[in-house]
Amino acid sequence: MSILDKIGDVSRGASDKAKSISEANNLKRKILYEEERIGEIFGDIGKKYYKTRNEDPEGLKALCDDIDTRIRRIKKMRFELNGIRGYKICPKCNAEVNERFQFCGRCGARLPDIEDENFMGFDSSDLNSEGKIII
Image (cartoon, rainbow, N blue to C red):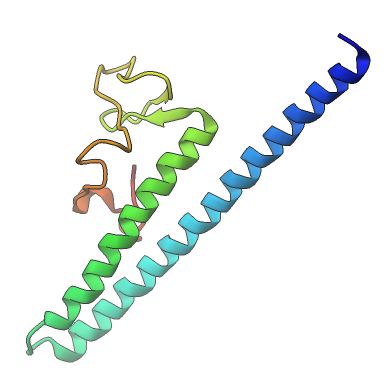
Protein backbone atom coordinates (compact mmCIF):
# COMPACT_ATOMS: atom_id res chain seq x y z
CA MET A 1 0.00 0.00 0.00
CA SER A 2 1.49 3.27 -1.09
CA ILE A 3 1.48 6.54 0.75
CA LEU A 4 -1.12 7.89 -1.71
CA ASP A 5 -3.47 5.01 -0.84
CA LYS A 6 -3.08 5.78 2.85
CA ILE A 7 -3.78 9.47 2.26
CA GLY A 8 -6.85 8.55 0.21
CA ASP A 9 -8.14 6.31 3.01
CA VAL A 10 -7.64 9.04 5.59
CA SER A 11 -9.39 11.65 3.44
CA ARG A 12 -12.35 9.29 2.81
CA GLY A 13 -12.63 8.68 6.54
CA ALA A 14 -12.58 12.40 7.26
CA SER A 15 -15.17 13.01 4.55
CA ASP A 16 -17.48 10.32 5.99
CA LYS A 17 -17.08 11.77 9.48
CA ALA A 18 -17.90 15.29 8.23
CA LYS A 19 -20.99 13.95 6.45
CA SER A 20 -22.18 12.23 9.64
CA ILE A 21 -21.65 15.40 11.66
CA SER A 22 -23.53 17.42 9.07
CA GLU A 23 -26.45 14.97 9.07
CA ALA A 24 -26.55 14.95 12.87
CA ASN A 25 -26.57 18.76 13.05
CA ASN A 26 -29.32 18.92 10.42
CA LEU A 27 -31.48 16.49 12.42
CA LYS A 28 -30.85 18.44 15.64
CA ARG A 29 -31.96 21.64 13.93
CA LYS A 30 -35.14 19.97 12.63
CA ILE A 31 -35.93 18.51 16.06
CA LEU A 32 -35.50 21.92 17.69
CA TYR A 33 -37.83 23.50 15.14
CA GLU A 34 -40.51 20.86 15.75
CA GLU A 35 -40.21 21.27 19.54
CA GLU A 36 -40.52 25.05 19.25
CA ARG A 37 -43.57 24.70 17.01
CA ILE A 38 -45.20 22.29 19.52
CA GLY A 39 -44.73 24.92 22.23
CA GLU A 40 -46.38 27.52 20.00
CA ILE A 41 -49.30 25.20 19.26
CA PHE A 42 -49.78 24.52 22.99
CA GLY A 43 -50.00 28.30 23.42
CA ASP A 44 -52.56 28.49 20.59
CA ILE A 45 -54.61 25.75 22.24
CA GLY A 46 -54.62 27.64 25.53
CA LYS A 47 -55.70 30.88 23.86
CA LYS A 48 -58.36 29.16 21.80
CA TYR A 49 -59.71 27.29 24.81
CA TYR A 50 -59.77 30.46 26.88
CA LYS A 51 -61.76 32.30 24.22
CA THR A 52 -64.16 29.42 23.44
CA ARG A 53 -64.32 27.48 26.69
CA ASN A 54 -68.11 27.43 26.68
CA GLU A 55 -68.35 26.33 23.06
CA ASP A 56 -67.64 23.07 21.26
CA PRO A 57 -63.87 22.41 21.41
CA GLU A 58 -63.76 20.78 17.94
CA GLY A 59 -61.36 23.46 16.72
CA LEU A 60 -58.82 22.23 19.26
CA LYS A 61 -58.73 18.78 17.66
CA ALA A 62 -56.88 20.05 14.57
CA LEU A 63 -54.23 21.66 16.79
CA CYS A 64 -53.87 18.47 18.85
CA ASP A 65 -53.53 16.41 15.66
CA ASP A 66 -50.77 18.78 14.51
CA ILE A 67 -48.92 18.22 17.79
CA ASP A 68 -49.27 14.42 17.41
CA THR A 69 -47.81 14.59 13.89
CA ARG A 70 -44.86 16.68 15.05
CA ILE A 71 -44.19 14.33 17.98
CA ARG A 72 -44.02 11.40 15.55
CA ARG A 73 -41.55 13.35 13.37
CA ILE A 74 -39.37 14.15 16.38
CA LYS A 75 -39.40 10.53 17.52
CA LYS A 76 -38.28 9.35 14.08
CA MET A 77 -35.58 12.04 13.78
CA ARG A 78 -34.20 11.26 17.26
CA PHE A 79 -34.04 7.58 16.32
CA GLU A 80 -32.12 8.50 13.12
CA LEU A 81 -29.82 10.83 15.08
CA ASN A 82 -28.98 8.09 17.56
CA GLY A 83 -28.35 5.75 14.60
CA ILE A 84 -25.81 8.21 13.21
CA ARG A 85 -24.15 8.18 16.63
CA GLY A 86 -24.22 4.36 16.60
CA TYR A 87 -26.63 3.58 19.43
CA LYS A 88 -30.26 3.12 20.45
CA ILE A 89 -31.94 4.27 23.65
CA CYS A 90 -33.61 1.61 25.77
CA PRO A 91 -37.29 2.56 26.24
CA LYS A 92 -37.36 0.98 29.70
CA CYS A 93 -34.16 2.16 31.43
CA ASN A 94 -32.87 4.86 28.99
CA ALA A 95 -29.50 3.14 28.58
CA GLU A 96 -27.46 3.80 25.44
CA VAL A 97 -27.03 0.47 23.64
CA ASN A 98 -25.00 -0.28 20.52
CA GLU A 99 -27.30 -0.13 17.50
CA ARG A 100 -26.41 -3.70 16.47
CA PHE A 101 -28.15 -5.17 19.51
CA GLN A 102 -31.86 -5.97 19.71
CA PHE A 103 -32.08 -6.14 23.50
CA CYS A 104 -30.80 -3.91 26.28
CA GLY A 105 -27.78 -5.27 28.16
CA ARG A 106 -28.85 -3.53 31.36
CA CYS A 107 -32.54 -4.48 31.73
CA GLY A 108 -33.18 -6.96 28.89
CA ALA A 109 -35.95 -4.93 27.23
CA ARG A 110 -36.41 -5.18 23.47
CA LEU A 111 -34.90 -2.14 21.77
CA PRO A 112 -37.04 -0.07 19.40
CA ASP A 113 -36.78 -0.51 15.66
CA ILE A 114 -38.21 1.95 13.17
CA GLU A 115 -39.80 -1.01 11.37
CA ASP A 116 -41.85 -1.96 14.46
CA GLU A 117 -45.60 -1.54 14.12
CA ASN A 118 -45.90 0.50 17.33
CA PHE A 119 -42.70 2.55 16.85
CA MET A 120 -44.60 5.72 15.99
CA GLY A 121 -47.02 5.32 18.89
CA PHE A 122 -46.75 7.50 21.97
CA ASP A 123 -48.77 8.69 24.93
CA SER A 124 -48.89 11.79 27.07
CA SER A 125 -46.01 10.54 29.23
CA ASP A 126 -43.75 11.01 26.19
CA LEU A 127 -43.97 14.81 26.64
CA ASN A 128 -42.33 16.85 29.36
CA SER A 129 -43.88 20.00 30.81
CA GLU A 130 -42.34 22.15 28.05
CA GLY A 131 -43.84 20.09 25.23
CA LYS A 132 -40.55 18.36 24.40
CA ILE A 133 -40.73 14.70 23.55
CA ILE A 134 -38.95 12.31 25.87
CA ILE A 135 -37.44 9.24 24.25
